Image (tube, rainbow, N blue to C red):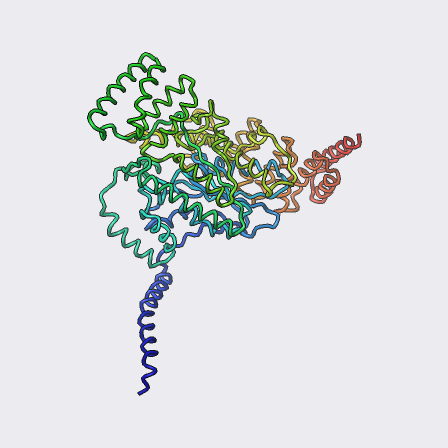
Length: 626
């Protein structure tokens, strides 16, 4: 017997023994895929019936839940973009939560919609795509998870506006929407979720365990904000509080490194919230201190209430301020100090107190100041460009304290606030190598704001959404039903029908366009047509309508942009050639205007229309020669 081969045979035996379980698991994984068990939710999918275009997957949120049925009903607003990026296209991708997505206005109020319009006006000859991957209830974990798929579509820049959802969003440090509760487990979850075996275990867990768990306080609440909150409260500097800061810092750090390795520049913004007009949702309980301090609080608070009743703000403030030493953790105290200092014109003290009140709010729907500190450090450490959104809002807020003038409730901007958010990124991009040296029309602030893509219908629907939000927890202890107001005007009826899904988005936009045409409101109609053309870059009619309305309004550069887009779809569109002729003449491009006239002739445009265009071109030529 050859004993020298025995160790080798033993090694082979052990290798086979160890491989069998792996082979069995592999076979089971393959079998589950063959029979169609489980799901895969890529970030981007092809657009149905629109060859050559992609969009964000409306079901991508489902990848973060044990079963599709458990997923929150949120999605990324669809923006169509070319499957194969054109070499001359500037492609920008937005990441973030609901305030980056534009809640409650949707895509058009968000960073992508607002920025797209501003960049188009400034660079009408440049093809620009601003694609959003932002959606409600997500935070740094999902943003990190999207990174490789975003890099795969070859963006020229990534814009990040995030930080509010690290506690109550999906994978938040204290959220009912978080599948697991540790940083390492969350990252492992993101790696394993594509495996069908892992999905099978999730499914079995969901069926056997989750349904048996006791109902949590907010299970039957109506709004997503209500469902995200746990009864757990997070005190400042507690373990849970620090976990939120740490996970944000770690995840965004890895995200920025991923993009840096891919050579993709990143712009990351500080976040803002309502300081002046949003009281703390919940404050530390005074009952937790000893009896002597409780008595002091009660006596002092009674004196404060008495001063309020006589409208003596100075006495009220003088009464409250000594409490700060013993009751520093009380968000209610600091908010009251802020209000009284504010009324007395002591804005420095007011702002300091409002910030302390926000940071001590036990329900962490607003990012604490530590998040903005982390953002500034992350930008510096990872060579990202910092966009100081907070400074921009402070500069526009009365007295430098952000409130209802720019914020709808606790943190979502109003229309002016969203425009200011996008303008902050616009200004930062303008100063970057990405855009410097590129021909620009250099539009001023008012010109850019005139194209703000939020309609009256959007405003009406947004107002109702905010009313519904504020009628539920945590704004109210018990949810109150909010009826949609009875319409009294045509646009109000369109808004109600859209809110109730009696009209889809395109039907509502067409109804608005018809109304504005009948009312001869060119600027309002132009905004609507522009939004439709942006939403449907593949549609000849949408591009033609936007181009012609831009031409009628005298915005020739944008008119040419959209009319030539229509011609790229159908080169024989005579009406588009006529519009291009007028636009080129208006821009002083006589040769291009005459070429457009010749193409209009070849495509059967009526002689009267041709004669008018020819006359316009001659007048433009004479003007140049003067």
